[in-house]
Image (cartoon, rainbow, N blue to C red; front, side, top):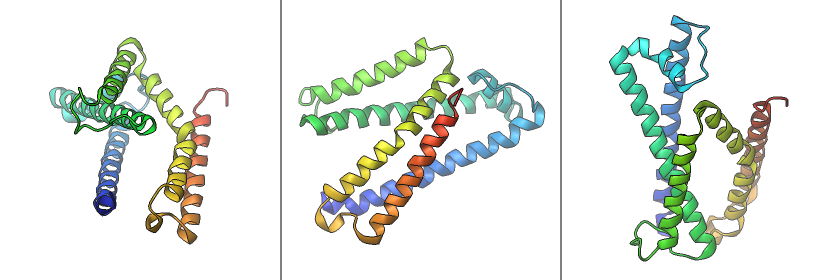
Length: 196
C-alpha cells in the first residue's frame, strides 16, 4: 500500500546500512587479526578461519563469538532466502503468501518455505567443503545480479503507481548504477571461477 512506502524505504535503508556496517567491521577485524599471528596460515575450511580469529579473543570466547556469528548469519540467510522464495512464488501464482496467514490457509507458501529450508539444511549437511559451497553460492549470486537488478528496475518503471515510478534523470542514474553493479558482479563472479 502506498501509505507504507515511506516506512518501507526507511526500513530498507536502515537495514542495508546496519548490515553493511557489521560486514565491514567483521572484515576489517578479521583482516587485522589473521595476518598478525600466522600470516601464511591456510584459510580453506571453517575451522581454519576460526583458528585465525580465536587467539585474539581467547579459546573459549573466540569459539563462542565465532560460532554465534556463523549461526546468526546462517539463520538470517536461511529465513530471508526461504521467505523471499515462497513469497515470490505466491506473487507469481496468486496463492496466499504471507506469514499473517495460518498454514492451513496458505499451504503453498508454508510448503515452499519449509522445502527451501530443508533443502538448504540438506546441502550444508551433505556437502563437506562449506567454504567452496559458500564461494559457489556467492559466484552464482554475482552472475545472477544483472537479472535481479534488471527485473527490479523494470518493476519500478512499469508496476509502481504512476507517481512513484522511476523516470527522467533519476531513471538514467539508476540504470547507470544498475549496469555498473551488474557488470562488476559478473566480472567478479567470472574471475573467481578457475580457468577464466
